[in-house]
Image 1 (cartoon, rainbow, N blue to C red):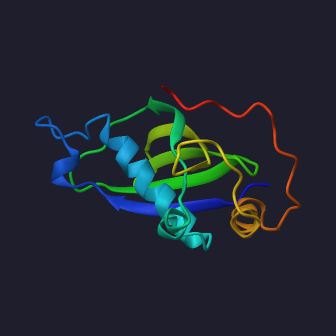
Image 2 (cartoon, helix red, strand yellow):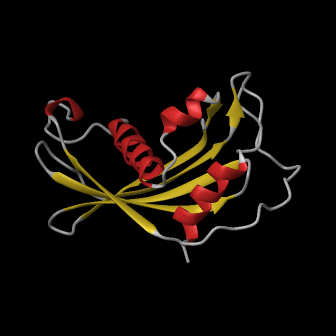
Length: 153
């Protein structure tokens, strides 16, 4: 069973349109902030991965908007890892406000790449920390799949 991570975000003025609702593309920034906090809470801050020249670019994203968030709303972003192996990780997100109104659901998929942009496996120590954050226990690395998503050109 996947473990859920929660992050809180207060909607800023810069998140909003003149109509006082969060601009649709800003939700990707909000999800990115939550994802970064997930990595930090898992003991794998993204800065430490960048020092090793490991990056997790988004290769797929989907957002489903259900309601609007407005300036000064406090949002609760729930993050769950839905897929994990040594070369890729996927997240599902649920965004709601403090009134329990569902604002958005979404998903992102990422692959692990080096500084050259080519797919590469995560080091075992990082994979194990992410696996622990994903399931609550460390897992033996699975064989690498030959079907790794290609980077968009």
